Length: 181
Image 1 (cartoon, rainbow, N blue to C red):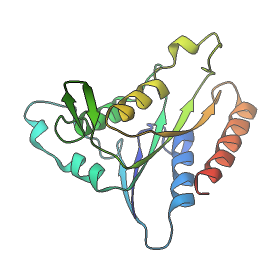
Image 2: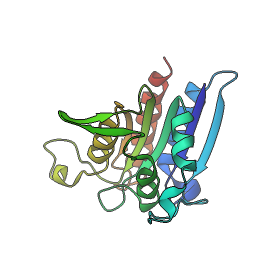
Image 3: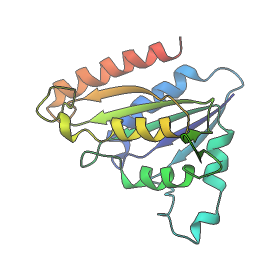
Image 4: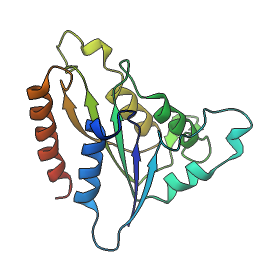
């Protein structure tokens, strides 16, 4: 089994999404698992240009993975630009999706994608900020589009204060344990 482990948080050791993604990889990796690590901050994928579009190395790495674990913090209500640049390389017509007479068809499955979300506030349905949640909804839409049903583990309210951050992180870490089952 090959696991592609992506991180996109700019906060380094202080990153909740990095703690969660690392825990998830540790939970799902079995002896013999190859883990391919890509830190999108330390080694960013350049933003998409027509010239850069010919480089398929990111797409090849994604397609070769059986499982993809993504650390995704919410920045300004959506994905970090580093993660968006990576996404732009894996959404390729004819490779991960195609258009048909009945609509788009995802071609990237079967593949397991687990996303470790970290959000400073609370964005669940019915909350005052729910209309601003464009992280999970965006990632769910993107992966569904290419034929994958992603799984999510979230730590919410981490900017409320140290006690809330700790409680949210611990709850998310507990949730990550269930992913290996």
